Picture 1 (cartoon, rainbow, N blue to C red):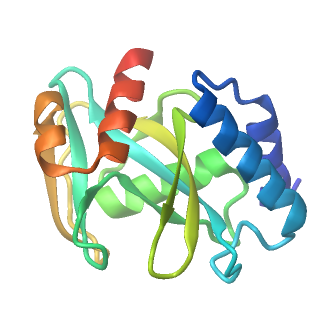
Picture 2: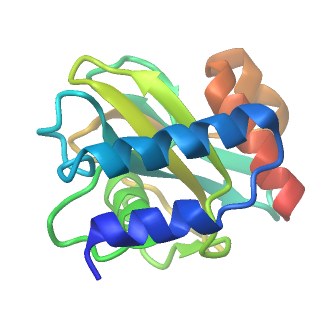
Length: 175
């Protein structure tokens, strides 16, 4: 099974909670149907990306990265790579690379939500997961970040855009 096939499988089976999430799910599937290269950054019409919100449920906080290029507080994530076998694996790889935290584990294999946003390279059709931080996790800034910082749930709306706030809310509802 290719990463493209896995993305179609994940999106086909995704149960969405709102009309807007269902609309995105259908848009992602249409994109993948029309673009054999729809998983890769080279697809200028947009591409599927994978991200993870790193969460410490015991501490009631999330780890956000101040993205080097976008200059915004965001969850960990980005482009899929040829070595990624699954969307969930890509999301976990991105979270581990960008947070520097070993031992992260996904909060289930099902995405938490979908978010479509325009970036300097193209439209990102982001499939968003949540990753649980192990006890005593210590973050380490990667080349893609200017900063990493833990924020209490109630602080996220003060620093991040609505897509991150929605991801935090959706993740918390799964805990």
